[in-house]
Length: 459
Image (cartoon, rainbow, N blue to C red; front, side):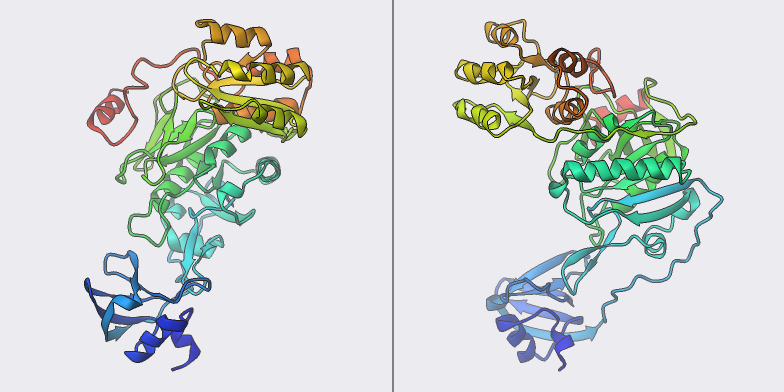
């Protein structure tokens, strides 16, 4: 057989394919020491080991079979793989609301290339409408790739580029709303910083992602994308939001404010939660239902991308036994601000006090949040908190730690005056600080359990 018959397979794995005279894309029945498996032999990506055969099961999931466990392979058919998506059956209507989909990484608008094992952006209009033809009924969506990267590799430089591109799309391109396809792991950081950077925002900016890759049967990509485009094209909100699955089923997506949202589960489809409040609303069956009224409304005018940042800011999670040299390190290496996720009402060990005092004496603001996430910092309650206040620590109200982190970066891009910094940290700029928390916000976990659905029905 030709080399193409064994795409990516080498060593022991290739030898066993040759032994049983099967190839990539063969429909096979593989008998192993632990059972019989039926599926399609898939190519292996370039850096894969030579100890496994990868097959796609009838369920749509992929699995790897150890070659040392394989007893027999029978070919029962052949289904050649397709690397190119079929031509779309629908055409975009340019008369509909113009919604750019800016690709910032992640799997929300992508497909899997089995030749390399890589997730390939499907960000030509043809590919996008092939994947999710329903989009043509909602808006004129035109995709554009900004960069390809895992979201853990997102940097302040990327945030600045995103903000400038959003500004360009709205002010020069006349976008009726903007959708950002983003990896889920650091989506809340990007949503928060854009909430501060995009001043006078006149239209929705919606971040959306996918917890499950788009080649999996359980992928949440299509529904998330449909609902995000619905919000961007039909919603009356003019804020940065995250729109993701509200339950583990394909029921609805919740609309989260960009400064109050957090990824709260590593793999569930309803991983994103509004913390310290309830979501702004939901998108269900292409209808938008708002739960709250205190949001910025659509307007005319231009957005301003205020992208001044100081990126030398540290976010420290306090833990018992933390040594003061952690804080001294950030001082000695030229960091300009420190955000601490303290315990309870905003506490750290007394053994850190001298290091914190040194930071503040050297004009490095130290901002206190709570690692509890829910609730407010209350540093006047206990002696430890009062002592920290006397040192000059700035309480961050009920800001989430990562929100305080990006907010301090943005503030330090504009001023180094300590009094002004303190004032801005404690000023609600983009919904990051609330006057209180809803009585049922903490109890109601916002999706997937009966009391949640009952609560949403009441709203």
